Image 1: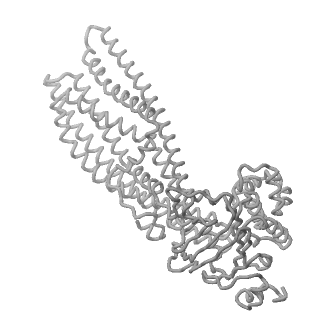
Image 2 (image 1 turned 90 degrees about the vertical axis):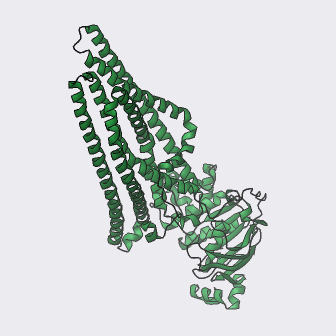
Image 3 (image 1 turned 45 degrees about the vertical axis):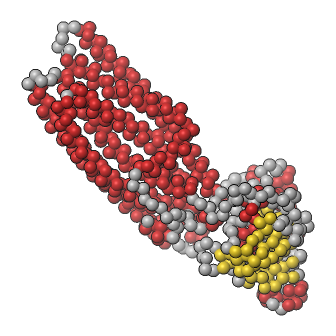
Length: 598
């Protein structure tokens, strides 16, 4: 697909579906609701059967219209009303059951896709934009809802009307029906030919919509940066370009569908007019009754309407098949980081010993650039280790590998002697607490943001964690205190306030291993001092790994590991590293005005 070649976000090398068989992938979601599905099919068959009975009643009325038995005529009209009532009830039941089924199945699909993607490692999201995933969960499932909740039932009903109508047309007049059969191939050929074109265009349209969604999501999530760099015009132009390409694909799809509709309807009704002309001549010749001709006409209209409806619905089915393919891709996508089939239990209690053994690692997006190169490091239980070095040295990569967001290309990483890939990720991550470089704040209250670290925590524990992170005072000063809504991504908070909430979240988690990735970078000097005190108190009872550029925050670490270009170039205490006059000493001289005396 062109779109994927342009943005480099090829999720999977997919093969285009040439059939509607992709919709069969929905069966696992339909299976739990077999009773509801059976009831919907029963209502559908009932309405189709009743609709096919109506022309028979009309024939009796027409053939006996001039008869002397008025009571018989009344009974025919009464029967027609009963049939109409059954048709109305059946149609209402079909709509209710099918709509309920569609809403239920789509809800299950959305949950299944979200359950799948929320557990995917960051390596997965290097290959697909988050906005595209959201587009699949929303736009594509909406298409499937329209098919399950409407189009499929309408298609099946019209298919029954087509088959039943053709059979009853044959019983009514074999001669006229034979003429109709001559028309059918002329109608089917354009449906098959243009339908294939519709399928390709529908898939292209959905792909461009997904990219448009991803582009908009990326720009809006970074709106402050966009505005700060006066990049609005370029962002608008890029979004407009992608949107126009989506529109062009949609326009071609609509044009194809319109052409198919025109051809099919013209051929069908032209054929019907010709057949009726012959039928009218048979009535004049006495070879069939007027009622039989009316019955045949009604069945012909039913069949023609069914064919026209099927040609309309065909396009919707094609779009839904493409949407199903895209959702199934997410459900079947392989996570580069996998849990073992039989995971080893996490050691209890977790002591917090972490060991890197000759680890080599490069990010999937840039495999030729090693982030860690032959990296070996053992962190003892309860030890506080600081990782320092220039940007790009690999410090944050160490944190991400400990969390097993990625797997190394060579070597291994262990927790208390057990390799991380041997344990379930969610199990050993319970022993870790993270304060990321860019704190993540959710669109909820300050209290719930801190409680994210330990959902079962009490309000008193949350407040204690906030006090330890030097966050209590500013939270208490908010309009509704801890219950104040902080906005999407914490827009109502300053950078330092967001970072203190993230630290409080990690403190509340009370995990044996604490990971701090530039945790105090956004704090003022007073707040940094208070948080540093809290971190030092926490570090006394747990393994702590600190990534820092500001060396003042790591002077009291048990050990400072100096990194450069993915390797360890030195390690020791602050004083010993300064005395070595190496990279650490140069970094210290840049940050401390009094050099070694600092």
